[in-house]
Length: 118
Image 1 (cartoon, one colour):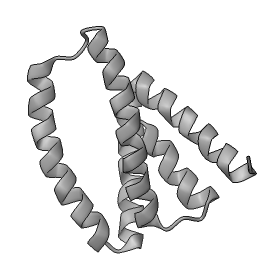
Image 2: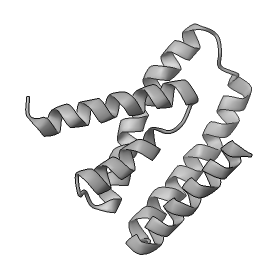
Image 3: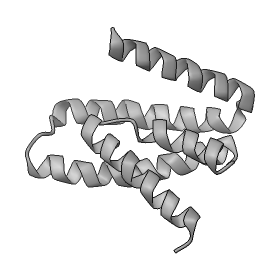
């Protein structure tokens, strides 16, 4: 196996642990990894990250379901909003200027970090 494949698997492993443990965070690792380390295009990195997260979420959900830890009432309502937001967000991703996308991502990271600290 070449270095890049091992690197991708390792970063995916770390993102999967964080995603499963905290319920979020896979994208916070994968997007910077793909854009900074692998020099991937911003839009492709984000779209690829969503696909990676899809499989992480399926895997984690299976284990949470088996332990009866899912509140289906909340899940279904959030899923409806998530589907609508996903459509809007993916269309915005394609049409937004890459500089604006980077600024929005940094603002989101700073906001999320401050919320976790406070």
